Length: 243
Image (cartoon, rainbow, N blue to C red; front, side, top):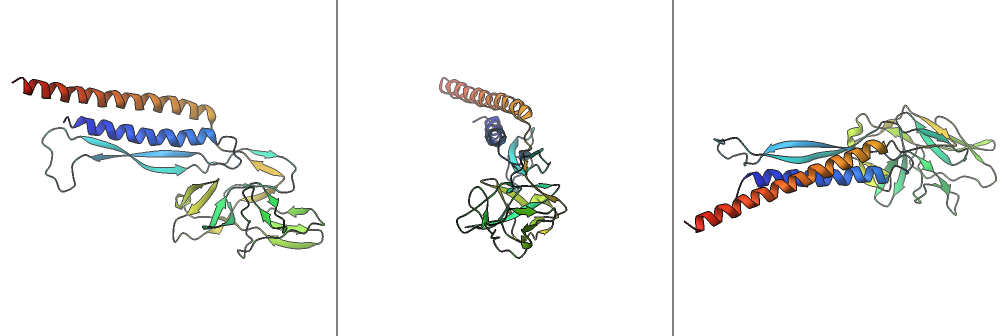
C-alpha cells in the first residue's frame, strides 16, 4: 500500500475534527458568554520512534494537537435585568454541578423555588465561601462590581469571581461551562461584575463561515488524495498479477 495514504488519512481526520470545532463556534454565536475555540495542529513522523531513520523523504502525519478556547472578551449588551450578570475583563463565576465546581462567564440568572441564585440550567452560583446564594423575595438584589449582593439594607452574599494564572488549564465541558485541570487553583479575578448586562459570544461569524468553507475544501482534497493512492495500489496489484 502507498505510504502516502496514511498521511492523507491523518489530514482528513484532523480536518474533520477541526470542522466540528468551527461548526460549534458558529452554532453558539447567539449563546451569551460563549467562548470560541481554535484548533492547533501538530506534525509527527509516520514511523515508530524506535524505527531506523528513513532513507527517502519521510512521511509526515498531521494530527489535531489541542482545542483551545479564546478568552478574548465578547461585546457587552445592557439589558437592565437585575439577574443578568456579566464580567468585564478576566474572570469566571463559580457554579456547583453534579460533577463538581465548574465555571462560566455569566448570563441570565434566575432564582429557583427556594430563592437560590441559579444559572438558566439550574446550577447554583457560589459565594466566596463556596456556598449557594439565597436571595430574599421582598427586595430586588443590587450587585456591586466586586460581586457583593445587597438586598434592601443587608448584604446577602458575595459572588465567587475567579480566574487562573494560565487560562490554558480551562477546557470547555458543554452547557457553556468550563472545568479546570486537576490541581489548578483559582485566584481572585481582576475583572469587574456588571449587573443588568449580558456578554455576547466572542464568535466572529463571518470568519467562522470562511473557515468552514476552507476546511471543507481541504477535507475534500485529502479524500481525493486518498482515492488517488488507492488507485495506485489497484494498478500496482493488477500489473503484478499480469506479470
